[in-house]
Length: 605
Ligand code: FRU
Image (cartoon, rainbow, N blue to C red; front, side, top):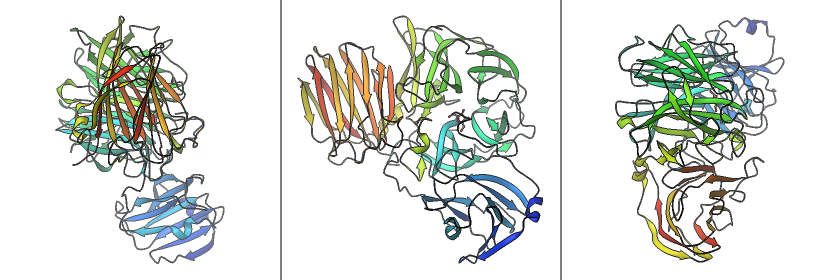
């Protein structure tokens, strides 16, 4: 993300409240709710004083409002500073501040930059409940999304004791980027997720930006054998790296008392990913520094030694490098293993904005060498696949990646409100060789097959120009998988339009002369929220006569996995009703669709 353009304010904790005493009280009004009092002070400053607390203070939010500063004051000391878009003219939704975490009875809020006539003053309320039931037509069924509020990058993914942990960049105080915390969810099967409480909250060093987590099996850090150790960026006036540990499988984290652990005089210096390097018997940390990656080593996760950097003259540099990963993967059809450096880039992706590139090569415990410096390799060929990283400690030597399914060009403006953003599906990574080059294969994780209901529309057919299927499923919830195997006779273009009764459609086609697969979402539904949203994305295709495609459609996304994961394309779409028809077409010849299965997908647990 572009930090200058997006005005990210350092998060500060102030431990004295001398300024309150200097403010003249101009106006004080008893609100209709006797449990709190609102005082308007001069210069658009107000105080909300809680007299009889309930579990939550519910704040009315209007996304079009500017951010106001909200100081949480407990016993006359500021314990937290938030940036919230309080409603001035209209209320979009409410967000909760959990008051139950404060043991003291003396809680108040000082709010700056909101006019006395704003609608929020009549609407702020106390409540013992906060309703998170889904209210959104575009909330995915089987992709992970936060219960409410904003989410971006997946963070700290680690597997331990039968649980996949997913932490994520989270704003609990609005559905736009800000106030970064680590949200937390766990899953036993990568598909059904249980939401847990926020894991790591901002502190005096800053808000909590992206990072990773490891299981410290051998107690190298001294917090306890088996501790989950999170290493993340503290985003204050500068970006530094910090750590926190959990001795109860991620339910509670304690911050290390000597944070930060890595500092530098570089403005963009973040997103540490840590792994154990067996050959050199030590931890390696890779982080993004401007437009390069830096590597560090450590024996105890606390003290880090700079080893090397990577990036100058390598790959795409249209924007800042973020969220790195470095993993070793087997090369199919050989006994070889190679290292893959995953590098998220924003902007500068192939279709504008955010994207994930990767480099294949070797790593000797000190530095990474790219074996093909002349080639830029993209991990996913859609517009909505960013901040991709893999699970640490995954079972059976699996490398499982997940991405944030959005793009910084429009992520804050997509047409949802209660929540904003979902993750991609989990993908298992391996390497394959094509024309002497090594590439990533991304296969949908096998667990996704457990979501399948009974296949509908199982059939095969020949396409000679046009073949229409007027109903994909009897009852279409908008969440399904289409499995298509094609044998080409002599067609030059093989395509299908997925559409609904309103004429909203996504057009997918292979151009076999160009050896490319395309997805066109220009008329896919709601597109007007950003001029960067309408798009045609394209991927190189290596298959010849036989083509295999798995298309995962959810309420607001399509992920196409081609040729068993040789290419992937992830794009958001916002149709007014589910796409429930499909029309195959061909140009220049005929082809056979030998398999056409549609599986409704749902989470039953
Ligand atoms: C990537 C990113 C990271 C940063 C985080 C902040 O999307 O910009 O580099 O840590 O988001 O939310």
